Structure formats: C-alpha cells, structure tokens
Image (cartoon, rainbow, N blue to C red):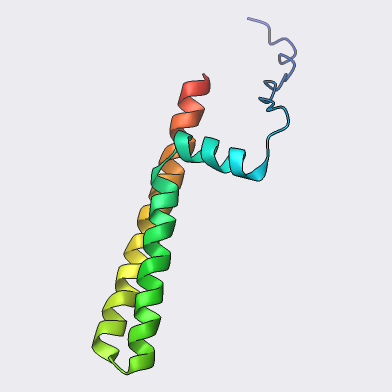
Length: 92
C-alpha cells in the first residue's frame, strides 16, 4: 500500500447566530447546559455564606462552607466538561 498525501484538513463551519445579544446568548447557553449556571449559583451562595460565617467568627461553619465550595466548584467543572463532551458528540 502506498501512503498518499494526507487528506486536507477542512474545519467544520461554526454555527452563526444573527444579532444575538448577551441576554439571548446566556439563555441559549443555559438551555444547552443548565447545570453550569446552577453550579455557579451554588458556588457563589456557599462562598457568600462561608464569608458571612467567617466575619461573624463562626470558624467551624466557615471551614465547612469553604469545603462545600470546593465540592460545588467541582460539580460546576464536571458539568462544564460534560456539556462540552455532549456538544462534541452531538455535532458528529
């Protein structure tokens, strides 16, 4: 078998969205992967509660909330990766 030249690399065309504003893009992305905004909301909520606990001097609760924040960030990251994988598989 002879090895010929490699096939030309032709990237697939990117989807275009005519006149899409920030709010419309946010809603579209949220519909595509709803777990990412939910994870962000959980992360910010836990972080805020942990900082309030820290300011009040409740170190035990503050430490617990900071650990919960790490878990929430991990969930958000996993949701982001899962959404990217689903989008990649769906586009094939």
